[in-house]
Length: 253
Ligand SMILES: [Zn+2]
Image (cartoon, rainbow, N blue to C red):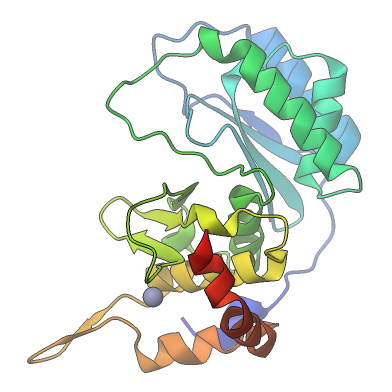
């Protein structure tokens, strides 16, 4: 893929309706289809054309991205039948409208109240994209909207856990097998600017776009095209400078 194409915006007439997709739900799941349709209608009243994909995915309860002229929302089926204030919150989150913090709080509360009704897999790593201060899913979704390529469709993101040893730190990692981005929890602090976390997410995402290259005697993870693309991050110089200034403080905790 050429880099130019990645940055191009699509334009065209705006469709009026999207669709409700139930095909991703497991066969045995019982769900009220009229209520699912009502949720889809309610989303379209607020957002215009919406493709609403109901999922059984506990790792990503909600995510939204623009696909052409529609908004594609993937939401856990627990949202079927939710109150209109929760629908409002989902809509606010989907369009990153003002009040997005309150919307997240509302959705978090709804998830907490309804968590018991969800199937639980013990051996699944607990993935958590919504931090105290930074929402990794929102960041991932923004980059996805910007780079609408298949290589990013199945990427999952989570805050990592605190490990031992604070003399060095890895802000992020990309697990190629699990298609999983982990971000170091030390970055989930109020004084860490959004653009820096976003830069780390961007770096890890580029690993999915620019896979390592195997040379005769070594493996190059950060290839030249990787580095070139990394430097195209809108606040690259600022992010670099911020990291230098604040690394000691990040290692301190
Ligand atoms: Zn890297």
